[in-house]
Length: 216
Image 1: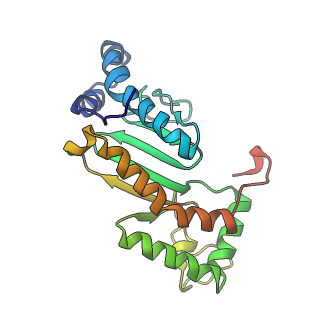
Image 2: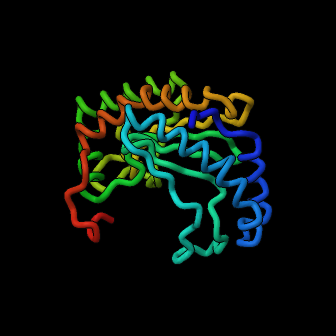
């Protein structure tokens, strides 16, 4: 089927779920989720697969094992566009991210060294500046309160050094365009605009080589 955006019913679904995050409510409104929330996401990923690879929709259930919040369902729908970007829809509208949300210990070491370097560090600053001018935020998952150990507190790129991950993020408040094909155009535009950050990370950080149990 052709992607036509998310109808207003999708946002109404999440408003209701935030008010009553229970299995009874979910079961009673499951048809709305399948049709107005999950359906458009599946259609979007199918259309983007040719350019970015097969997508994956994250499950709606929350992992409550290690959380004090025991509400059973996520109040958003999130998906991966191939291995390239993350897309999310909730009551706040449409969001998209690209980069390394969480870095393993070896990645974080390489990242900090590259930020500190007199050539690769300014290159990252230039990328971040260009994204800011395009209205795209560059942020990180978790940040230290000061410079990491071994780096001066007055480092010229201390704000970047403090991050434990680095992503480009764009949030669009809900409006009529969300229920049209324009939603896909915005996501594609973001993915392409954020590509320089992804390239910098791929070149100077790369994947982790640590065993899974040693990455934190």
